[in-house]
Structures are given as C-alpha cells and as structure tokens.
Amino acid sequence: PVQIFSGGVFQGIVYAVKNTANTPANLSTKAFYQRSMVAGALSHKVLKKGEVGYFYGVIQSEQDNS
View 1: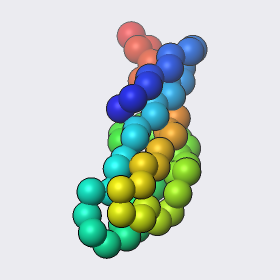
View 2: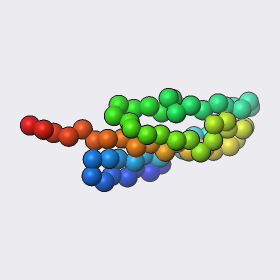
View 3: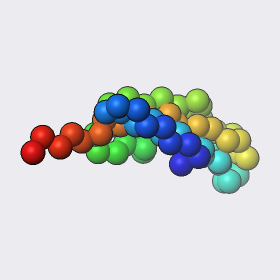
View 4: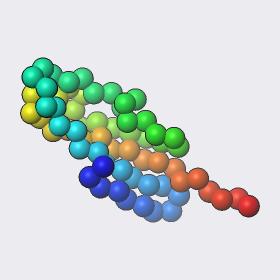
C-alpha cells in the first residue's frame, strides 16, 4: 500500500502496482480483495511493460458491539 485513509467506520487504501514483466499484465479487482471490502477500483485494467497502476479500495471496519 502507498496510502491508507481512516474515517469513521471506513478505511481507504491505495496500492501501487508496477508491471515488471515483458508482457502486458491484466489486472482484476478480485486480486486485491480483502475481508470487509465494500468497494474497489483500478486505474488501469491492463498495464504495459514498466507501467504503474493503482488500486483504490474501501474497507468497512469491524465494529465492536460488546
């Protein structure tokens, strides 16, 4: 992760992904799935060689109801 945001019951997380392969890399939001994730988006669906893309996710914090 390159950035994490917190506010209320939600947390935002930003991942940077660089394609170091010689061929294009197909990205999927499923690859970044975490428990309690409620939303996710990619800046690129395909990364060319050497290209950097970002994943933006929103995670709902678990509430302690005890």
